[in-house]
Length: 193
Image 1 (cartoon, rainbow, N blue to C red):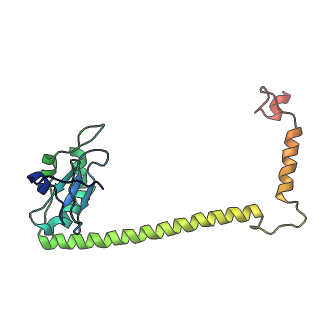
Image 2 (tube, rainbow, N blue to C red):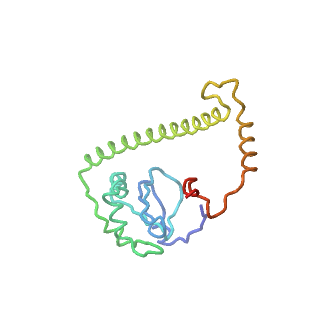
Image 3 (tube, rainbow, N blue to C red):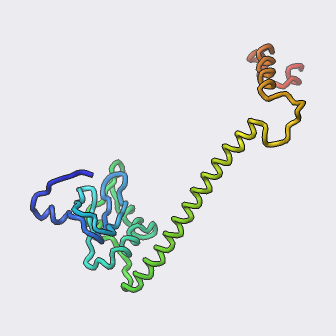
């Protein structure tokens, strides 16, 4: 957060953020990222990298924000309008010309309610997925630990410990002759012929 003292000019008043505003990133890697101001956040201003959209009717804000972030609608239009490969950008004219299918207010409210329910469901699924993934990761570590301790299957008391077996294998490898480059990788049958 940067603190600034704006001059008492039109620029300061024009960039002051209010509840129900829609903010759209217009330059850089995050171009087209969009947010809705859903509460009073105190005195805050946008900078030159963010377009501030203030609707004539604030009741349209939630619906219009959903339209703007929709991959099949507003977001796609903004992505298509963005220019510049190295530092993509949008200009305010492109923001003003963003087409929005604006149904009657009651239909907007119904769409917003349904989308909010789906977002809540998606959040719940994501939380369950995260919890499940954590459980699987913990289970994997537990299984590996048990495997290395020999606790996954009944052990024959006559079997030697794995550490003794590993030492024997290492000793055998250190005494075996190393095959030369010509014979390395060939089968024993191929060496005899």
